Length: 91
Image 1: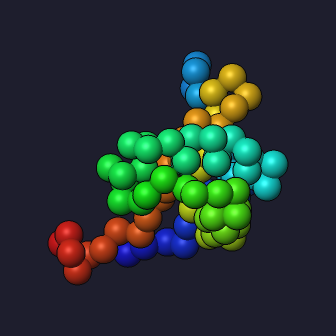
Image 2: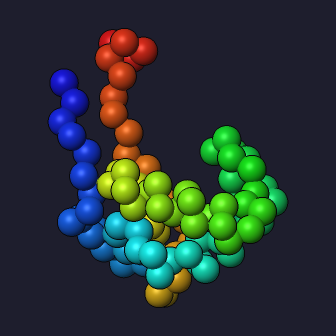
């Protein structure tokens, strides 16, 4: 059984990374890595074409409360999404 996912109050720290909720102020960092060809294709998304596209997705991340920003030395370098387990597809 799945419980609701809400990472909005969760911050995880390792020696090198901080996993935390996205912030509106992360837009420039998000666009910087998401616009590079080859970064998102393995995850199924194409490079972002402009800041507006990144802003729409960032807003979705923030509202969805299930995607961490990966921060390294004060800069967001990636993301990690937490998804519900599908018992129908993976019994």
